[in-house]
Image 1 (tube, rainbow, N blue to C red):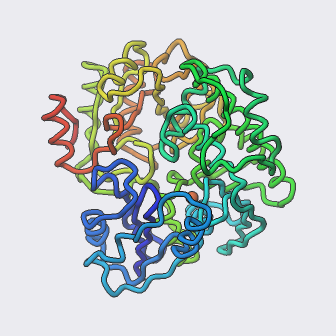
Image 2 (cartoon, protein in one colour):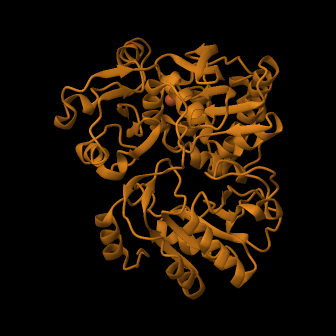
Length: 479
Ligand SMILES: [Fe+2]
């Protein structure tokens, strides 16, 4: 049976097609509509999914009516009519809906290798639930505990994102990056009052921070970001530690938008010996989650390269030559990544040894100059270059860099790096590039950033590649 999972109406709409435990296709709406964080699906996305077969069932990622009711009572955004209901491509296909947090839990647990796990879901808000703990056992997922609106880790973080002038529900990752440039103790006490203990918040963050009461200078923004990140990490640590004490499993599955905070994720390894965060833990991953919830069993998870297929072999030689000659290699090849990170198929790779490369790539991408870049490293050398004894195939953790002088362009101001580890099974082409690069330079690391400009989605298809080449007069490598 083919199941089409759908997530839409709030942010980051996506679809995912599965059949008998195989993920056939999964992609984000924004890559087709070119509207960043697009709330709704569209027919070009749906028809790309349907080129892998017509679904027998649709699985929707949340309870539409319950969410509508919550928005009517408590406010918030989203809740418009899902596009798929009027798409001519999906007429007459039966629909089953799942609860928002259950879809998150299913996306995480059913893509994991675990036969038992503590599943933690933390986000801003689903229908009414904001935090939940589930127990995975065999193919069963059972609710352990939940917390409802207004208590919310995600709303806390988003409200401060808004306070410092960024876009809530979209630019939390920028605030996380800014935290490294601020003093976490300057506003520690003040921020702490908003979230004084793990299950306790004095404030409903849904309408933002309305009582900060003092002017915010440019430096304040960095100091507030640092204090918020610090408080968030301390409360998260307590939350996870209690979950670890309460439940017997040593395996953690962490899902929901909060699992996108790679800096905080790093501390999970101090609490649980095994951690799995699916590469798309936010709402976009719940397209897969809803489909998996309906399937009700573990999926045969092969990795995040599930979107639009550009075909062709990975252009290994072209990339290595470009890196040696120009130090920068934009590449578009194979299937697009499902998830927010470019993990090699829609990436700009660059020489991390050159301290000036960061500014050059930031100029290409039109990003703020403080924004850090991430390294991709051969898995077997990861612990030699970064303070880590785990793998990070989807750039979800930020260990300390152990050789910052050798790869200055992929080290953040606080000495950490958001690492992607890669082995030959994960991505044989990207692994080959690294192997070649290591042979020539003695460095098993490259800079890896997404192939897009600020505020725009990742490049997806051939038209996007052509447009990029014409607009920026820069050649993208492909076979
Ligand atoms: Fe969510």
